Amino acid sequence: MFERVLVANRGEMAIRIIRACRDLGVRTVVVYSEADADALPVRLADEAVCIGPAPAAASYLNVPHIIAAGLNTGCDAVHPGAGFLAENAYFAEACERYRITFIGPSPDNIRRMGDKTRARQAALAAGLSVIPGSDGPVADVNEAKDVARGIGFPVMLKAAAGGGGRGIRRIRGADDLITLFPLAQAEARSSFGNADLYVEKLIEPSRHVEVQVLGDGSSVVHLGHRECSIQRRFQKLVEEAPAPSLEGRRGDRVARSAVRLADSIGYLGAGTVEFLLDAQDHAYFIEANTRIQVEHPATEAVTGVDVVKEQLAIAAGEPSGLRQRDIATSGHAIEFRLLAEDPERDFRPDAGVISGLNLPGGPGVRVDTHVFAGYEVPPFYDSLLAKLIVFGATREEAIRRARRALAETSIDGVSTNVDLHRAVLDDPRFLAAEYDLDYVTATPAPAAEPAH
Image (cartoon, one colour):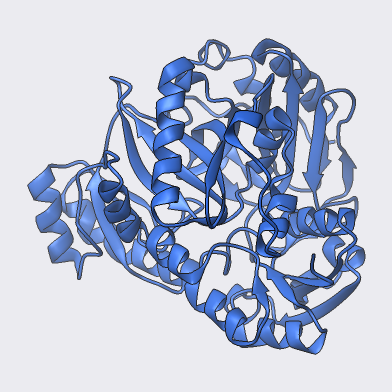
């Protein structure tokens, strides 16, 4: 196992990695921007190194500064977390060049699966169904228009190097393309350092499901599936494991296809293969994420597998030790993303000082967070404040525990989506697991409770 790991991320994900390392007796060094100087990861890590000013491009996306931080502190590995450089093949190669182990897939894996257009090609070669669309990135808005007319509007415009819902736009007609193409390009460039976009057919209605996989370079196993259909702006809000829409043999088929794809490229580490289900329950591959995902705790709850510790072990050259026949899911988990944003104002993000905080606990409740009373939420990054994960023997018990946990939750000083989650738990569509990707846009935002 490694002696010292550089944590190249921030927020609750950085803390999650620090805790996994501590469980394994591994020391950690966390990098941070000037905006995060007083953040909890800085306090919890064994060492901390400032790598630049607040903007991500000057800090969390600054490869030379991060590599230098690792070398100067004697780190033998780096964990990129989720977002930022987690799916950046150049960063993975730079780590290799300086003999720092990249805790994640190989650069070739990242290029073949992290890039959405190449992942489509790999999926086709592995026998998976894909959504009709462009064969690769489109050169400009005119080529995008030609592709869209060929497959028929409406379409989706997506960042080729994307993830986390960024660089995506829903296109209803040619006029939308002219307006939204440069906006999607700019968002893709600022988020991933890559402005390439591709086009695919918009499937309505649809549900978003995904399969967690782990590969050690010689074999791949799956840890079941998750439902991720409650989203806003193509970013997930609520995730369930297992996915209610993938019961029985249907779920087995989708999981096996995810393993087949990962196995076909000799996948190394943790990853997620994502699908859309259409109204006829046909599963289309949409993308693969070559990193740990925000929603991995839901899978941990139902499998008992610590996904981050498995990442560390695989990167250290230890065989996974997991065999598919030994992995079983039990019970039901639901994860709620608690965000600093206002659902009543089109989910506008908020920043400021958290003046009061009460987070839940008790049986079947887990909270992953980096915030505390007095913490100042910066305006520069993702609005995620905490992840609330509930577990029960059945979906019904998980929902009851979620109601109890959210009733105990209060976050004062910034706008949050806590009331939205409470409303979801009272919605008959959610209770019956009869929701799709249009759930949020079809649901009026709940009125916020008076400020405390």
